[in-house]
Image (cartoon, rainbow, N blue to C red; front, side, top):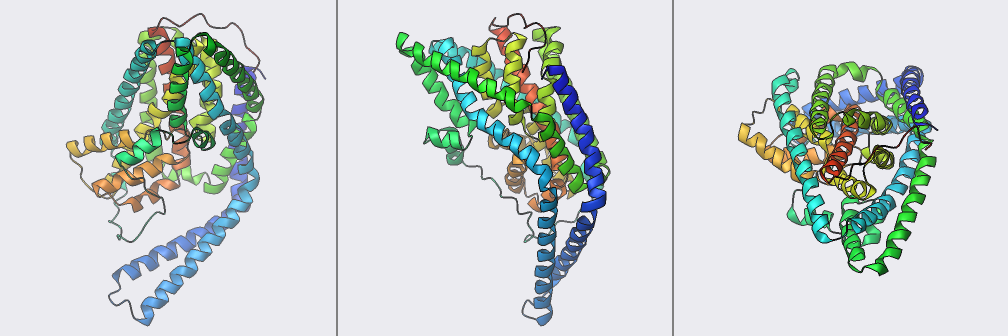
Length: 465
């Protein structure tokens, strides 16, 4: 399948998915959604009555609790029926994502070991790593600060006028704790096999760095290891080509499921917030492209053209991990040396989450505005630093940003129950931030290649994938 055809098929799948989702929503899912909405309204009313009840031992209070349990069961059953009805579509994207996840861990390991071994000595690894982290840190800070400035400018939460919820209400999203022990445990693997099995990219990167440096250090004996892993990497890239043929089907299934479940109304209900967030992402894209232009000059536009398929895949499936193999291929065709690509790109998936960083700032301050909670400039900066630490290694995990936000907002006395506002539209927002993560990582890899003097001429013509 040629590149141009793949892009066309993905775009057609997007359009067909929206049409199919709308039709399925109107004919099949709408009645179930009505039942779920009615149950949620009843639960909210009952929660308010339970919250103001003085005596918890009265028959009336027990009746309220019993009725709430009944309504919760109705909502849960209806939600299960809805998921069953959507199963035929979600299976399409699930199969594709599983196949991609099957590829990512061995691809990151083999390419990174080969990349580090080819770089050679530890000094060179340190030099390239330093340049890479300089770009990542700069891009992360720009994303966070731009998100903070724009959410303070637009103030989308003020239109919500929400009362502070009762403390016993919860979203059901598990919060992530910010502790040094957890962070260290997330970075350093206790078992390489476990890290591979769980697709813990950051842990795989750490082991691969050690393995690559050690392979280079043993000289000629290490050559056979490098050649073997290089051959395995090419085999995995060939598998990637086969898997990518399924991308349009996955896109169709993912978009159909979202629209069928939420309806086109989800686009208008939060249209202002969605519009302002996507406008902010557009500004971030312009900043990333402009920064890339200063280093890459006119070639930056060719890079964007080459990775458009990968961006579309990340956008449609709501995970930047799905685009990893495609980005790796296109960067090498763009002219980046494989040793730089296989070194920088995996690191980017743990440390360079431009879209996710902007979203987490935007969403956290949106919740504060929704509850009319004023955060000083110093508090907002503290929040940015907390988000910067807690977000490492979340790329490629759908809805992981919500988990990080749930843990962070609690530190600033913002009700985590407010995340219910975002759960419904999170898939739509996740699409944009995943696509932005892909652009940011591809740009970082190309820039570091140029800085290292390792950016060669691009491959000519459309290569079969």
